[in-house]
Image (cartoon, rainbow over all chains, first blue to last red; front, side, top):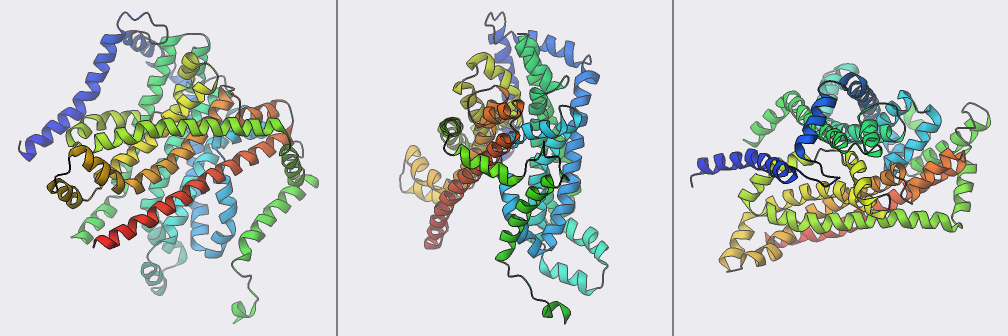
Length: 260
Length: 262
């Protein structure tokens, strides 16, 4: 087969296999009497009834607001603190054991702490999402700033560029590929913590809905919520990939030309 | 110059000083009332509680349950992801056909499956292992796939021309050269497995540290809650250290192998 033909076959398979799996699921589950695995069509009906667009304002919007509020705080705090620790070697050495320990705590273990301090409202959820998303962004920013080419750093210094411009124009762009890697990790963490925090203590939200559906044995509804979370995870990941590609286009271009 | 005249603290002292500083801060601030003592007990009391716990058998049972959930989850994930990853990664067409499925399933937050796990497996260890294994599986298989794709084609071709059969090539060329990736994958999967174990204990109420933390909070025993959170952090630190050390050994072998080859 020609390389071109092989490429098209590959792309075709990449699209066809997931569709085929979904069709197989639909056929196998049609008329299913198994309680836990209702027919796929029932799940789709439940999905349409709940998420298009009945519960969008009551559950999806509160969930996503909390998630992006926490995520946004983590980005701002993570990058600013990361710059500070990245620029000062001694601050980095001093903070290292504390950061390592806080990072090692499994995030959900901090949830009871957040409930204790902030109660069960939105503040608690935003706090826990921000706290957990902070570490990947912070550590990646420290690494990124720290590994900026010293020649670049010193050249900017020698040309007398003011420190504020050096940070915005030199350090942050040079560290941005690594910062983006950290933000990408945090994005999936944000979704996970959004779900967990709503499962533990909430009166609305997608995580609350899914667990509540299971407790009331509304199985197709439960599945529809799982589907929605899967779709959200996929869409966020893909959307972030697009943003990253756009923002870091110069980086890929520079790398490609350097490699010749 | 002023900067050089001022005595500077040596670098090795800094981490100790900062740890000490944080401990003192969190001991003094609650005592003088800057932080509410009901929410932040002085750290010395919390550490005292933690020390007392070390001689309590329930504490060690909880640690044992958490470690068990973590280990079984990681084991199941490894037993599935490593063979599957090598198989899928070494066949171009197979890789292309499942890549879309993996890319779609991987970002699904595994916690979304908590209700399903409760339905099928109840609130015991099976639910914990299912969730931990599911989450760890994706971390691991992605790394294994990278590793397999990164095998030096010259090595594969050489093995082929020496008449090694396909299974032999997988075992003797593909597997060893993807070991560094698998090691990284195992380290990431270990962290994820622990996170999901604690989550399951917290949300479902399976026995373990997560459940104890949650109960300490609802029972109003704030010192115990902090002590257990610290204990969980230490557990995470220890498990991570084990994997970092193991990985270092593996990687020490790897570049030496490469140097001998060139």
